[in-house]
Image (cartoon, rainbow, N blue to C red; front, side):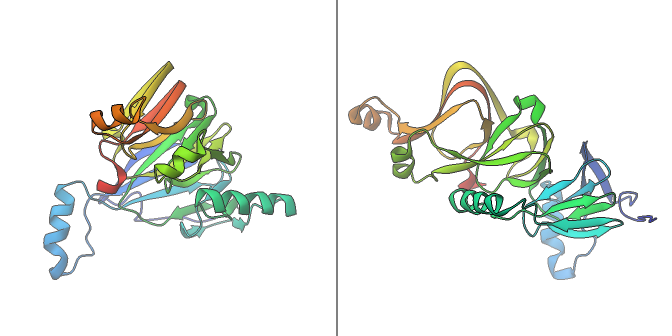
Length: 256
């Protein structure tokens, strides 16, 4: 049996979101500041640049993490590789090599508490039931999820155009029923949500952070011809077709 004091009940920490096994906390102020860092800490606080952490209750669900994301655990917590045989190992290694994600994501089981490393990024909790059980992520967003969710490499529909657009050939897809935890470059309040019903969305730049697995994703010229693309002032654009949802950041990731 264990008790955690001066953590979530600290008056300098507030709970900003809870879903399933995940609780997101935010540090209202950074009290561990040296005089030489005080000015920077002050303006960070004014601009909502704050440390955030995720607490996982393993009594609710086993958890799969991005490699290196664990900070501390307490109680009955066991870490495994989550590998279920040679075939599973080969599949995860292949998926990691094409998506850029870590090939082995540790799986934590038990009935204790798991706390993740602090981050200054914004934490999004996503219920996959709201995405019809399938979501595709931009590079680097995955942080943690219910261990019951399946991971897969999702290829671009048009590989040649992806190469031309300097984009990766594959994205990480998450499938199943459960909760997903993402590290976002901007808060949920600033994300633009586009609902498509048998329609098309074209985006100039790497602004989409997640989209429904039901959508077809390609990289194409902005116009039907080279002259048309030149006239529009744009080159290649990311195109999402079909029925589903797309989450857009207000600016491309390179500017965040």
